[in-house]
Length: 385
Image (cartoon, rainbow, N blue to C red; front, side):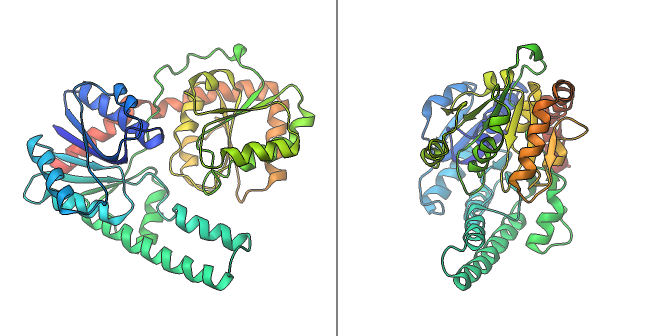
């Protein structure tokens, strides 16, 4: 069985990129032939993480050109590709390129939507502008309506073009249906992301320290990372023996550091981009207060190392991951007082933290790689049948 992943940016840092590497390597272990094609390759050194049998190709911008169609078609034909896995579900013209390149072949197009279907950065930015009173309200409302309509039409086209359409949670299926105005979605399958850390249950809780971590991209639109340090500012004086660590990089890192300095925050550190495993092993709590998400890798990965997640429940997939006392999901919308109290109460309850840590490790095993690969194989078989 021959598989080709199509990416916007690869090799690079990021959740989708990491998942692609892990899946590609595992498929090769199962005897499959795997290739990856992308438009940008900003961190070539990460290609070393790939099995040497995996071929890496590059296309050029703009996406929808005859040159790209011909090259992608050649890659598909020369490698006998059976499944083209499109990891770049939005925008529509990526699916258009894929479909044109597969004409006359037996290759099937599988699209994976790596976010909640009814939200994206452009829509979110307009909603931020509206909520904060930025710009002309009437113009912003008009933009919101237009961009949402375009997004809806685009996503519907991608669904219609694909042979299978993967969302990251069963809860996303009705959201997708409502968004693209389709009652029946026979092509849709819910398939979560795997934990990309292999050494689950290797953490000694007694070695953990009083540390809260944020792991991820540092930016305002989706992650709202500023909320993490605002909450820390609200509770830090009551917990002088605790520390906050920000692990990650992004467009708003400088602004976030300046914000922390202006508040006079202590016991806080900014680590930049780092492999997160050692932070998961030593920290007791993961704090994530995003405005929307798909299926964040950091939650399952943190749980696999006994780090208890405290998450704003702004996306329904969180309830697939954090359940039965494996963490705390705070009911949205974001309220700093509610988050601060919830977090502070947990920090003070040593026994509860220890128990939740143990439970989180057990529940994270549902997302181990071999379970997710099993679901992928079932998906491939369903397309064949």
